Length: 93
Image (cartoon, rainbow, N blue to C red):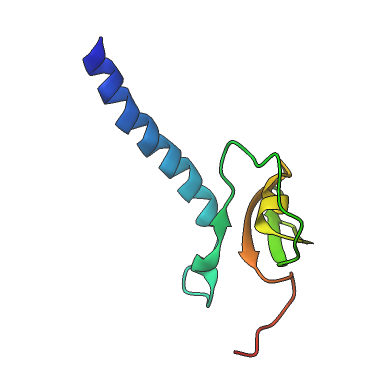
């Protein structure tokens, strides 16, 4: 019985990582900043600090919206990931 538990753990972790990776394949990894996408993790945040560090949240339907932080964005179950910076913001760096 213990061997089955030790076998199921790596298998389930592998499946979880593949499931998360499949969403990021929608992005062109050659696009500048494409790898800066941060995936929301389960369990979702219940409490977030009150600060403003804007992020561009990416929703399940592919649309985007600006959130005050990554924590507050990921607390919304419709959000799957986010990028640092407000949506539509172009960095001059």
